[in-house]
Image (cartoon, each protein chain N blue to C red):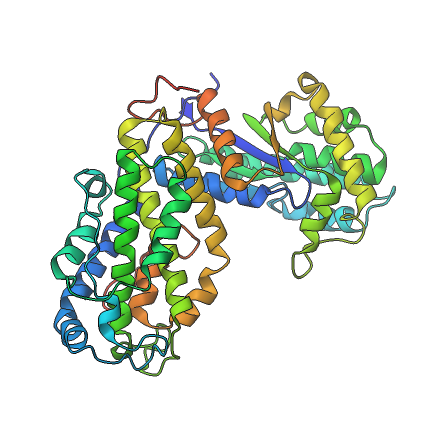
Length: 224
Length: 248
């Protein structure tokens, strides 16, 4: 059975993930006539682990690390079973963060290597993304952008330079050996410093090149 | 056997496209319902009581100067968007102060691709956006508040109306480019870039929309602007099943 793609957008805070997600949503809906489903890295679809997710994310400790890992995996399985797989026959799914962000979180907060975290999550989460976009940006600029947001969008224990620099370092480690992380699918690195229209254009091109968007009438010969 | 990634187009018309048809029809209906009222105001060069920046109604009435031979506006469902201003707009009228905002939006989308069929179509539809926003601005004082449906509304400034034109212009540009890309395919690099610029502008515009609609305040202008561009509230009027039967 044919299906649409499962696409993930990753990147530090302030790199333009939301902007790219909204733009891709409009692209799919407006040009291809297909409304994507957008979701997040955790969606609280398994109520039995919801408390563990909140505790493990906002009060991480060595005591709750394993429960948090199990809860994240359970939530992803529930998201795959209840949202992603049911959606894909009819529409693309765009996730704002997914696997890469979890690798970074456990690396920063629990000093687990990306490979260790991946191994644990991959024991439960078995469906790969088709494509992961990674928006890359210097942590200094990421912090500056994130700092302009209102309300409680930023966290004092996360949106600080040393943490974001470490997150970016983990991203770099993972992207250096993508074959070790097949659940991320194809990985496309995008410049988070580029203007949103250019970023969207590059992302769209990546989707076209991989056959992840429907063919338009005269689209077989894509000129550079 | 696992499912293969082989995206296919939707089997039927997406509901959003049908809601857009309804929204377009609403604009046409309202124009004709209020045409006499509008003519009386603009031909009498009457003052606009709730637009202190505009001294006379005919400021917004000039017939858009651009026309196009391309069929793209028709393909985009925007034939009426050009035909009605061409039919009812005044030849002898001052230049529309909303036109610079419209052309600015068009230029932002077109960029350097100024000699193409789609760019000509974009210039025409954004130019007409100034006339449409101007039309409903002229009769705004006779309308009702978009939430309370009361007659009382705050005044509206030229800056707010210019922002409204910018949003509507981006929305019409998006529709023209979608029509072009749907027909020509994705191989047109310049059109793809322009479409990305227009979509990025729509994302940027989303922050302004709630405040803009509050400032416009009047039902017909609010409906025109809200349904014109992709944002989270574009088809709220129709998605809740309440698209018909409101005060027109």
